[in-house]
Amino acid sequence: MNTDELHRIRAEYDREVRRDARPDAAGALVERAGAVVRQTDPGPGWNGVLWSDLDGATADAEIASQVAYFEGRGAADFEWKLYGHDRPADLGARLRAAGFVPEPPETVMVGRVEELAALPVEPPEGITLRTVTDEAGVDLMMEVHAGAFGTHRPRIRHLMLTLLREEPETLAAVVAMAGDTPVSAARMEMRPGCSFAGLWGGGTLPQWRGRGIYRLLVAHRARIAAERGIRYLNVDASEDSRPILERLGFAVLGTTVPYVWQAGGSGPGAA
Image (cartoon, rainbow, N blue to C red; front, side, top):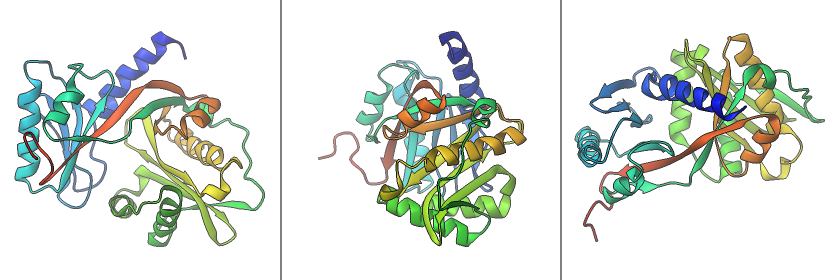
């Protein structure tokens, strides 16, 4: 992809995935509130700011407004998803001053579905794919996540169970099995009318890495997206997955950093 095309795709991504975002689960609310677009989930789902249109004169007041909003709702935490091209340029510093804590940066990558769906990929020997359709499948994914990332993710489990129950057409999740053992897992989230589908949660147990399973799961989900008429796959890539995705044909749109505010955290002036 050349520079002009990437700029066009980034503008389309900002519009469809961020500014005109839809809730990621039934029961969640996405709304435009002043100069931001935010999602609020009354349960254990994701709360946060998806998009903003700020400048140096308005940023601090808007940050304070969102903190007050989520704090007033009793949220334990919420995320301000900051992109490298968001303005003002010092928005990250302003968020830190307001008590937000940055998590590791990720690279926003995009690939054309038609090219990724055509990748010549076969399952490695001994590996089969299991489509996730129920709670047992979700628990297999959580087992992989715990082994691959070293963390338990109850919020992701809740999201997947909610989507399977309320909006199964928006989720494609798969587990790579070595016999009865889950060794890799990933999901794709799709929204009606959106040109982009998000790839999330791709992880492989350390002892099974380097065998092409990650590549297999990307191609598998791309074929599902192609059947739905989706044009692009987007990924918030870690440093581990970025080189693999680049070899598959993904291009860099920019960077993103999750800034997380926690109730009772270290706000301005705290010791």
